[in-house]
Image 1: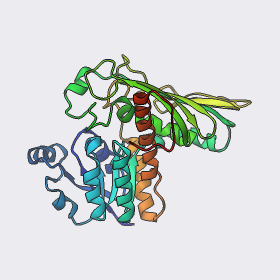
Image 2: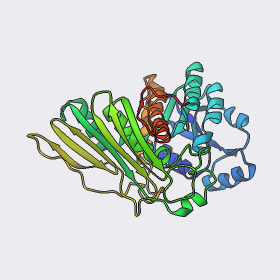
Image 3: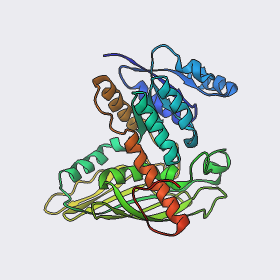
Image 4: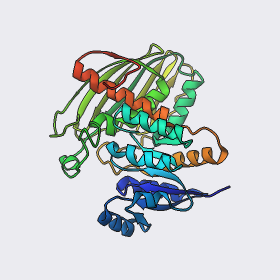
Length: 344
């Protein structure tokens, strides 16, 4: 089996999670990092103990480079990812895929046109308890789905925004609590409940002096007839573990911080994990581990090696951006919006 060479664009904190994850895997090695600022590149080389290039073309021309992982701020995903795709490299992008649908579609098309794979990091899809839930739903154990709810009622200190040049900005972050913090749980909700028919949303900036929202809610109608409620925030002290609730005609289940905390199916024994919320980023964005990143990387590498479909591709990654952009637009217009939704 061929060893695959990986390069990472961006040298922020999330890069460390990817390095930890990839280090646990066979047949994969991180060759180098890229940061366009020379001084930052030099500092990162010391921090991570890897070559760090400031010239993107030189970075993409590295011998043995097969995959490029983009870990820049959300609104800066497109350009380096396009360059990587055009250089014939498979592309892995941290969530969200991009900050609006036009930029998402450009990237999806570029990867398709250049015959390379596109994977979006939604590592929570690989949580063992989430997989139990999804498999049970697919087997019909919960019956016909009636409701799916996602609650991301988190808290961030003022410094989280004031010490960053891009978080909470429309250009760098694409918004606030929905597109940055909430998107992981929204992705799980869509993965379980299926396509959206319509949404009515309301977002506001309630606590912090940022461009994006720090508080929001939405009501969703799914194409299968089910409905759902979503809340997302970074202003709700002290911050509570993210929560996914699934209700069907035959039972229900609740996940908190990726752990099953309620599981009730008619006529069957309850299945509940220990309520360990240590992996939630409810009040600390650095609290997440790297194990689920490793699981997603392992699955992606396996797909490349076996020439099989990768799970969280560009079309999958587009769905949560479409929903969030529709929530923003619905709030702006104060009306229910129907899908498919396109940015105006």
